[in-house]
Image (cartoon, rainbow, N blue to C red):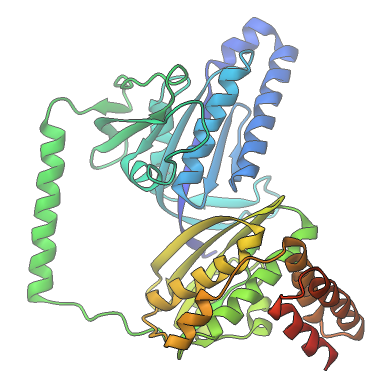
Length: 426
């Protein structure tokens, strides 16, 4: 079975001395504590958009779309465990890497299989951590550090690099970084173990610098003597149905509505051809390889992602992939208030146009800039209307009219809702 290739942030957790806890407290009380720990992990991961891949009693394997969410999860978990002193400490390892995702075989307790060398590396980093410590590879730190600046945690986040470690099964040393909080985190270099030996002295930095220099020279030579042709321009794109990761079936209308809004937004940009909603919705929930889906739809690129609504906020993560080469061109995560949803949609559309090298006219740029705040309840009614209108049934059209009328009643200036109401009537 062919899986889907994804660039994900991988998180492994492990409780400190869980066997000793059971011996000290007895099976029942230890079981209650571990169950409470599991509840905290699952709730926090859900809030931050994490997905549980596997759980083995006292350990979890989670994935996040972006490094900042993964690191935020790890630090907030350490805060929770520090505050609830009865709970044991946990070791956390985070790595950013390319993995293969595919549905688990029938009968498996896991919904999805996530495989690849990056998974093993994340597990090695977790095993290196001390109790209460969050360790990560340097790419995670580089991606998350700026994003997490000013986060509402117990104090400023401390970032400390401990240089290179030779991790078992990995062919080159990995720079290990700790993200921590004063008074909670160890904030000291983890000791070497049989499976992770620290590179001593300045040799690591020099070897990395030398390797980087040699690699740059080699790439320069390759470019000079055998230049590769640039990517062909993107002329067509499919916006695949956004995955609803709120896990609430009642929120499907929101995910479908956001998908349709992105399709409409991108379709109005320049000369880019966009596949219709009717065609792409056939791929809702599909886990096949993107190049295959793109070939079936006859497009050069694919925009895919996830959406989660929590209260009056929405979080959307999207990535643009050149389906001809399976190359990730761009990815971004947005966390906004619902009232700014139209601005968010315009930002995504403009970014897609830029990455696809679409030249926007002055009128198109002005239209994108006009996007402003909207009443959240009006927008929810509008999306519900689009959801029912797409069913293409008399009952669905009747429900659509009700929701569109509700949207314009709540926000008389909502132009899209007025236009949708006119379509529903005609």
